Length: 289
Image 1 (cartoon, rainbow, N blue to C red):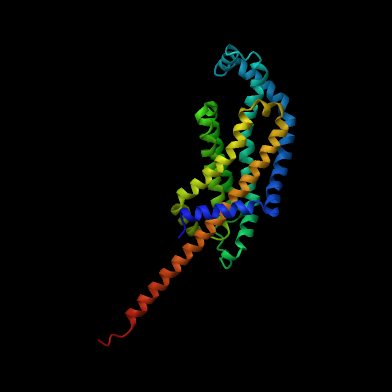
Image 2 (cartoon, helix red, strand yellow):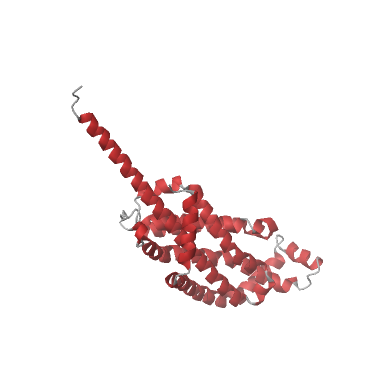
């Protein structure tokens, strides 16, 4: 029976699988690509972005009080580092979402193929409920929704209780959507995918939130540590690889859970079909009373 026991079982399988050299490479590949792209972009925009943010933070009635409050509290050099801090806070969600989208779209299919070749899932028929275009549209739409939610909630990420709650929920929701869809894209039909996502909505969301909580650790350090600002390039690259490794772990976790759930669903449908055929056959037998 797929349920809580399978959540823990698939967690253990994913944890062991993440340490495999091939999985480490699959976490390194998207990290390198995204790191290079964002590294170039940050290098090109760092100075003009900080200048624009400094002007905005100084002149805006919504943010100038922040600097005044920090100076009043004794942080006399607040003007020197508040713009870089805002820049980092703005760019972290963009980098995280782009990495998750890249992993889901380019790496998850490879991970699913590796998991599906294991003896437990051999013989699992591929019904291809979604193709390249469908996965692309679903991924981009989910990322857009998450980005809007991030922008709407970003101002309250500074509030101590919420900084530990909102990022895991947002990353967890996005992780659940992308991983669940892409894991089932090749092997499940549309009907099977919808049924599984509805039936296991809460276990899948819990798995996503747990993965989001793991991903929130580097986010919290990245966004709140003064050392992260001083060593931004180094810290950002290390945090980015940790994100990538966590997303690969999440892909393995969702793959084991959902492929097992799909196998169980088809077994249940087969048993129901055989039971119906058996009843029909019994009803058609002549009654010799």
